[in-house]
Length: 421
Ligand code: LLP
Image 1 (tube, rainbow, N blue to C red):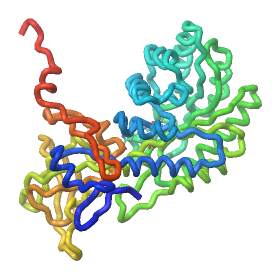
Image 2 (image 1 turned 30 degrees about the vertical axis):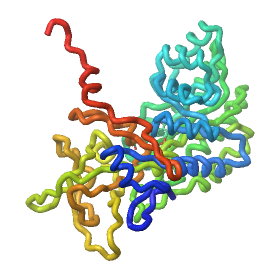
Image 3 (image 1 turned 90 degrees about the vertical axis):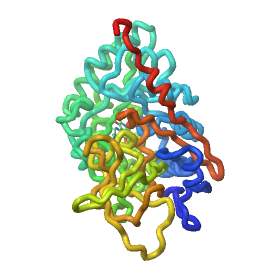
Image 4 (image 1 turned 45 degrees about the vertical axis):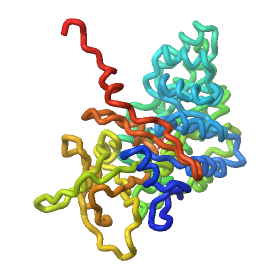
């Protein structure tokens, strides 16, 4: 469910016609619905009701200040993976006590930043990280609350580039060695061991891998408690998938995921954290683009858009599917056209879809990529000196540009020509 629906033949974001935003900000642009963001957060709140919990929004999926502010105002915590994300969360008003710090390569400076500014916990991923954190925290006279991320060696059955819970992946400590590493951690100065962390991957469309992982975490909780650790918090990661191809997928709902959490780890007396990103921001955003040309090739037609792989890299990077819909609603019973949907960038990888059946389109028409609110704007670049595209937020009848398109002068002036040239 989202708030991008056709009304009187035109696609709307909540109560604002997409075409009206396009006329004001120009294409391409991202548009987010505050109502959808809010609803998705609340679905997780309902799913975990009855358990002590904190939903830590994985802001890597969409870290615009306005999006973080919407989440923060709803009471969300944040899952951050860099000093930059930590700063963004703080700048949007999220208190340190609600920020968890994940990631395999935290630097000493990032650790210091978080210890100074306040942190809920570090999710530690290796022994060298544990040693460095201990050194830094004790040097500051501080105590770092930590969980250790365990790698449960579970197949998440998702795209290989976003699976993280198999032993061959770089993430976490093998669960088989967890007791040994917890024993070391407990002896280190400046470290307070409070829980366990696990995250097995992203865009999971089956609950079974979660179940396997969470049952292993439950067993480990008992074992670590028997070893004398006060395990009081479980961070269960993110990863619940969304229906990118609406006609043909129906991933599990947050409520079913919540029931699974309650069934597997709900009776351990732990505070539960989850780190959803995509399910909150993904279907809360569209990428809106204009048709530049329709080009007839030898054996196919190309729909050439003004958005490109630099604006939305998921199709090029993961072969990901995004539904692409016309902003003007096609007449009922229209005869579809078939296009390779491409952008203007100078490589064949700049292809959004091949042989896609769609309503016939003409230059100047607008299209919207659905499910583009997560891992869209945040993964964009200025490849081909195409400026980062604007982001817009809608709330009812109002909309605001929440990141403006940079001017070319600004882009060019970021470079410096050295003195000797
Ligand atoms: N927690 C941790 C430790 C993570 O690494 C991630 C995602 C999340 C939570 C949030 O997962 P989500 O609920 O969003 O699935 N760029 C890729 C996705 C990369 C996900 C990385 N980690 C894509 O466009 O599909």
